Image (cartoon, rainbow over all chains, first blue to last red; front, side, top):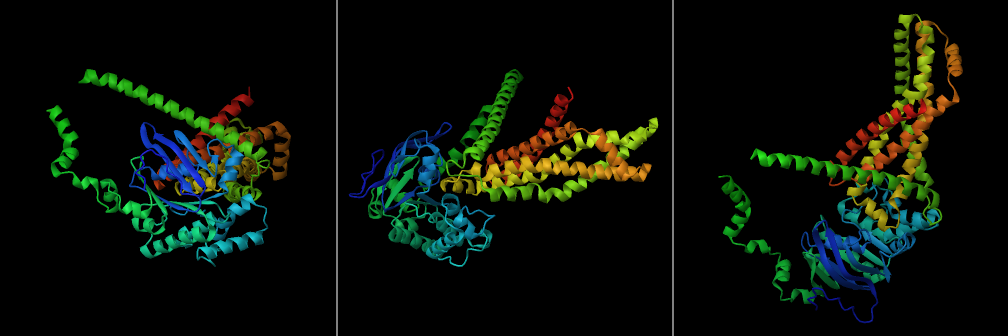
Length: 284
Length: 271
């Protein structure tokens, strides 16, 4: 267990590190979002990144997907410093990554099958029949066989997410990212998606990084969990270590207790009215 | 109180002016960057394994050009007939209505055909491009393209830009023919001049330069429409409201840019 404010995470023994994040700092204007993050993600593990709203987890994920440049710090993916790569090499690296976005991000003008075949169409010289066969295979993996001719608008929320997973794994990526996979889904569909994530790790040996705030889902799938809080890493470790962690903030997060609830009523009222009262006082 | 408010108002004015100037320059920079990047992908895309998709290019040509034929044709016919009506009405004062062909031919080929086509395509395709790219942005589809290793400029922008560059002049050419035909039909009805005589006079009046003048500026209009639509789409922030705002902004900017460019083109060409 590591209550690692700024210390690099020790990688699990014998397993190579596939994502290495060092001293990652991000600012939006004058607001600091990430305060020097250090994380290692090792091959074949499911790393869940958790945290409340505004904790910086979505920004962190955008950095990991090489979609956003940090203010400072380095991110090495499969040994490559992503911001030192040429455009061509970055394209090459991205072929080894797959992403399932929160709302699926399927292209609404294409059928499910065309969405899934798009990376093959763009990056390979396979003939159409082979691409169709591969797309059907991936649709089988996500239990969506036979849906390839439908438009994304004809699918349910859970099916869209599974179709997005099929697209994300069509190139057999080494690392798979999930952004809030359970968001907006009912518990049964959410649980099915969790099972799918576990299956992908076990059957295809992928390294998987999941950003979520669903505790139940995180506990079910995570090999390790990173807890972000206000741009800092509050915790990195296994599910059992997290559950036993003595930190009050972590226990509040696990028990879904708001720190705000512990503020007394007078303080809360003062905070709400303070500025207005002061203004009124000045004008009088 | 008022003494304190005065400098504040002045400060706020200059602050706002400064911010608007910086934002304007930033936007101009975006247009330039996007144009350069588009030509980069068009020319060098093949070399780095990311060629421009021919299928998307034809599909955009269909959307921007072929599907606009109907409305552009109707508008061109209306403008051509209107020019003939107004021309005959004005020239009648001098008893020179027979010279209406001069006015109609020059204004249709050099001015009205490119202008009306540009404005119609701006309303149809400039807004559609902006809405499509804006929606893709808020649905994270642009991000999805990037993480799949597909450059969004190469995938989304270049086909539209190229299609607009080809189809707006093509539509303008069609607009010239339809407009002149409609004008000829009215002249035939009002003055009894045969359509063949009208056409013959038109051909003898116009030079290749007049045609190139109209087609040249329509190509610039096409480029402007695609660029403005795309840049506004990429700048969308927020949800559906942001898409709506960007679409409106794109149409207003397209039409303004077309009218100003038209004026500058006319000024330079007639110097």
